[in-house]
Amino acid sequence: MLIEFSVGNFKSIKDVETLSLHASNLTSKYPHLEINNIFNKREDLVLLKSKAIYGANASGKSNVYKALESFKNIVEDSVGNDKILNKNISPFKLCDSTIKEPTFFQVQFLIENIIYRYGFVADKKRVQSEWLFKKAERETFLFTREGDKTEINNKQFSEGNILTQIFKNSEDTPIKTSYLFLTFIAKVLNGKISSALFNYITTKITLVSGLDSDLNKKNAELFIENKKQKEILVNLVKAADMGIDDIGYIELDKNKSVNEVDPKNSEKEKLVYALKKKYDGNNNEKGFQAMGFDFEESKGTQKMFELAPYIINCLNDGGLLFIDEFDSRFHSLLTKKIIELFNSKSNHKGQLIFITHDTNLLSSKLLRRDQISFASRDKYGVSHFYSLAEFKGVRSSSSYENDYIHGKYGAIPSLNDFEEFFVEENGKEN
Image 1 (cartoon, rainbow, N blue to C red):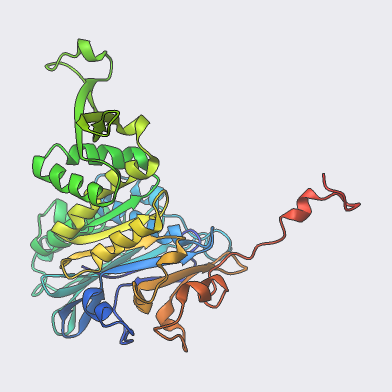
Image 2: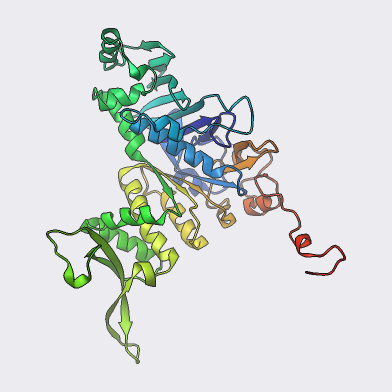
């Protein structure tokens, strides 16, 4: 499970900012939030099941999403992809002192009751430093690297011994500059600890853009090939009141008409359809009507179909689901229902982070104060992130929505008068 993610000198994030899923010591007015909305994983660790991020347009909300995406990309492909750093490192450009400085990434997560802290500092050409620590009772380093200097804890991280031998026996050691140690040990040396951490980062952290319909659609189409998965997805979509009784698909050849498909030699794509009850003039049931998803269903229905596999996998298999533009095309009651699903007794291992503008979700009955974060941008173009739990004098019974809209927590746009641009200088309208 994710504990926190930190990033510095990335896009609009200049200084190191941390998105934390630590539960604070603050208590809510509503007892169910103290039970349903948190994981009690260790005596010294209580984690949140979900986190909302609010902020004005261009405040940098999506940049923390993009930072975690870049971190994941670099971990996944730093071995075998010479361009991965150049493609994913994007320093803060509005200050002369940061343009040529490296970017900082660090993640803390819990695997099998052990806390791991892993991170690295890199520019577009090389990894400048990297570190891995673990904490069962006390935090212990597993390896550190700083430039060409490397220190490995051979007792706690025996898989690092092989790496040490490689350094000694090889004159050309590109992993000292362009590769991440973690990736190299996991993918090349198949180290036990490194592989577990690598697999968590690359498979258990799922980032989804609520507007990237093509990618999400393809994933959903693959998901429903499994009969049991399709059944769960259909039930979830039906529960969302989309007016659908079932979902099916037919496979088509991209280059031929339906009647010309050769199943042995064709490049197939799926035509997904919804089945809905059909009635005669007297409102008697007359079977079902197939409705094409792409051209006969609403954008909201399409999005629910596309997001459902991510939600199902996260709740069933565990991990983190981070959704940007979560509320886009969704009714407030639907987004609330999904959040309640994550913040429920039935959820034992899935975490949700979502970026939203839906102020209806700012309810003290739905979210704890530490589950609400804000992003703001100062006059220098720098993004800052902070939690509602950091504000003093905020009661758990307060109207978070009303206070937010009226600027009590910041992170709202400062809007000028639009009308003046449509009025002539003499006072007459254009």
